[in-house]
Amino acid sequence: MPVPAARNRRLLTAFLCIAALLVPVASGAQPTAPRDFQLVPEPPSAAFVDATATHVPIEPALHATDSVLIDVDGDGDLDAVLSVEYGANRLYINEGGGRFAFRPGAFGTAFHDSEHVRSADFNGDGHPDVVFVAESDEEHQLFLGDGRGGFTDASDRLPAMSQGNGLAVGDVNGDGLPDIFVGSTGELNDGPKFVPARNLLFLNDGKRPGHFIDATATHLPAGNDQTESVVLADIDRDGDLDAVLASPSLANRLLINNGKGKFTDASDRLDLAVPMETREVHIFDANSDGLNDILFFNITSNNHGWQKDPQTRLLVNDGKGRFRDESAARLPTHRFSSWAGTVIDLDGDGHKDLLVGAIQVPGFVPLQLRAWKNDGKGHFTDVTLEAVPQSTVGRSWSMSQGDLDGDSKPDVLIGGWGTQVRLLLTNKGAYYKSLPPFRKLTPKR
Image (cartoon, rainbow, N blue to C red; front, side, top):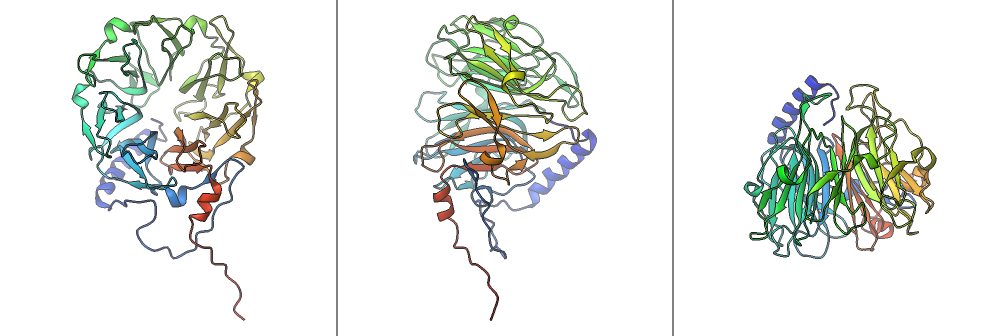
């Protein structure tokens, strides 16, 4: 959670929470009252059209920290589940073509400080379920989907709580059931001071799928974790899921899985050339050699002033189980802070490109989303001007992607911290056809 000014922010948050109770909730992307102006469509980029103004509920002060795109109602298109800081988590139903409508109360009406959301079929009924982790109130939540757009609160099945910031789901012990890995921090008054924190590992109970066993003490290394982001991926090519942990205050870490869900620390394999305050980690094959590489999105500080170098870092797999920092040779240099981004093929050439959130710190100033194109060998070039619509400006937070408009290409939903959630669609022709006819004004003769 960033800190524009800690005391003022708390007062503002309290005011907004009270105000939110007094304002009627709009159910769809369009304003409830008729517009008294003509919508002038923004020009698209080579990759996307920014469909935010017409296809997303307009909430410019919402703190949408993360999202997952899943089909919650079985109609064949992807809906959006959003985690929300200091609010109720949200469900946006896709009404077709990527146009979202807000369904209030899908996850209750209580306010939480939710940082991340992930989805899996935890109870094996064939329907997607969702799990949220919360920071300040430390109330993680589990909701079981019914496949018709409804959810049942099953949070009492989560065996422990923490100051949750990272979240990943996957089968870590090879029993065919998705497990939950929670990254925990111990921030005091939003940092930069911390108390010791412990990550959590919840193993899905094979005898009662959808119930969880706390395996933290037996399956995770003991110590002070301070984990902001977690990714589960096969790092050592032995067929099971290992874990890469990003930290806001300590060195980033690598945990190796023994195949049964027990992890040991192998962080000495990471070339951590400089101190980092990392907010998000991604695993992907950057240089097309068939090996997983590691990307860290970093900030200079949690808006406490200029402290650490916020340069995004790419650690390349050397094929021998170690990861070298090759950022200087492979990534554009920058001084903005990046709380999040996503790995995506922007132009359909089969190479993994990057969308990179950008915020100016000090100041916490919203900036335009960045796009970095991969040459196929893991060298990235900034192509923001051609790939990102010029209107895509905000405090970009965690992003999700999937085909929302039916053209078999990945679209992107971008979270925002106190700025509007944004939607980038790839089917530009279909989007413009969905808009009302444009009435051109001419002089009266």
